[in-house]
Image 1 (cartoon, helix red, strand yellow):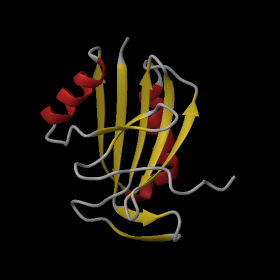
Image 2 (cartoon, one colour):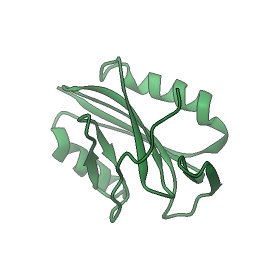
Image 3 (cartoon, helix red, strand yellow):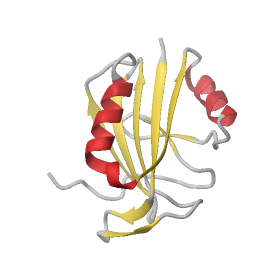
Image 4 (cartoon, helix red, strand yellow):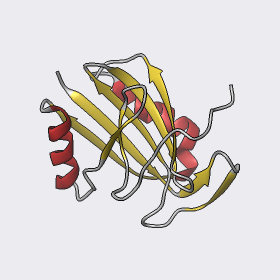
Amino acid sequence: MKTVLVIFFLAVRSSYLENSEEAATDEVFDTVQFVATDSGAWRIRTYATDEDVHVWSIGGTAEDIVELARQNTQKHYGDVLSEGYIIQTHDGIEGLRRELRERGLSDHLEISKSGALFWAPEGTDYRSKSTPRQ
């Protein structure tokens, strides 16, 4: 099965816990990510200030996750989008790592408690530290 990881870098670094936001740096920035694997599909939001992560299980397949990612991220974060990457492979996690390196990105991948795979900068330890408001 094809694995798809869509990563959007944001021009902000924020804390959900502290309800704060400031300009991103080259090393510290928030992300919005979408991933589809044979285990499911997820939307991931990272908050760089305190290395917090929120993960939502979503419907979707590898074939439609890219369009969903583009539309959703543009709608909610269009004013702070910085860069975006679409990574697709039939070689699972190792394929994702290879594709990340080929783009000059860290190949550091985390797996959340819910089983979602997501990208994180090298040397970080993202974990769910807050609960999104409904």
